[in-house]
Image (cartoon, rainbow, N blue to C red; front, side, top):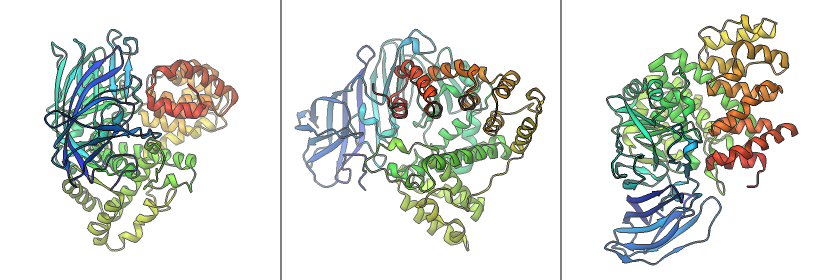
Length: 591
């Protein structure tokens, strides 16, 4: 099927393998060199169409080096420009000589002062959803899979890593060679270059990070191998060889990115107590749901994320117990309810199957796809039984390994291979209401957490006048603190906020999740003693999950908008383009 977010016509001619040869130029902020595409001409066509955005193409050659005629089409918002290359029916390879733009949206170039080490520059890419085309000419659709290899040339002394088979030590000449033998969609192309170190975490897992951070990262992520083992027990072998994590500098816009063999992760997970490692479980789960079986288009985004959240919580349950995973599910329900309230209960964007015609697919990146998808799968599990659902999922991953899947195909399989085998299951689940209907269906599963009930008792005690210092909070996890902060009454006074801060030192918290919830409360209740911490938080990291709600909350008042604009003027140059686009829209910012 054609992808509305791609110019490519893979039903006619499809790319099967990519060979990159790129020079990394930190001074010019450019990637330059060549991309050789091995193609399969399915139709005898005479025109290969690729996606590009901001690329400067100098020449194109075919097979043995003969020059090819090519043309860049008109630019379209979000999509960039199609690159049309004249080929013959017998053409097997096309080589594009090109350079990326210094402001390529996928690529962030960090000066040494923006890194933990402070001595060397840093580069990382973020290709999802349709940003691969800003640094590689390709068929930039999740429905097209290719193997790849790469030669990357970087300044001596720096280490280059990719979503491929990776080195663990710095080369003497700055030249690195990579190979990805499993076929992947373009949004999983990834590159990072910096002063990196590596530590092993187990038989097939490890962590990369800037050298001043790598020991801390290795300690924090020590349970990674246990998570891999638990995942394989659930849904079959890990098929990518090595599973490594790269902890990036703070400007990375997401919590994590599931690049195969090398998950990119935010440094905000380094809380010092291993309390935020569910993010690793999530990105690891993508090795099955997303990387192995992929949404065919971005309208089907929930197939990647809903399945992954379900799998993530099953991993966390296996490693840390059911009470722990149920806390995560309760927080997920809160996020889902907030998303539906924000979008509107009848909004078309609250359907699982999206319609992103004419829109940037990055707009789909909210909690709806993640959490509504999770609760649908949990409902199915509770309806047919865990054993039957696990058997279905394991078979699903096996049969569709290294393939793409549409929502329609998945729903047909669920009906034919699972629900039809259990009397009354179709009526109890009501698939259409979840997939094609708005809001949260009435048959959503209920989550019970004894730990959170105890937290709610302490919230009520505080409301009744119990001093914050006398609340029973010993041994609380990050998740319990988040639930506590979210549950505080809307009528809090500044005096009560000060009392909480004095007792628990929220404004000075080194835990990004807890600090974020506290800062949201501080904006809401105009608690000025936290405003310095707010500014430092917005200046120090670029994770969009935190930035977006904080800027939105500030923008609700004239004084808050003024404060937000002043902070953003300083912070904007350090944010990735993904985060800049979101905050520009909130503040109506004109660069």
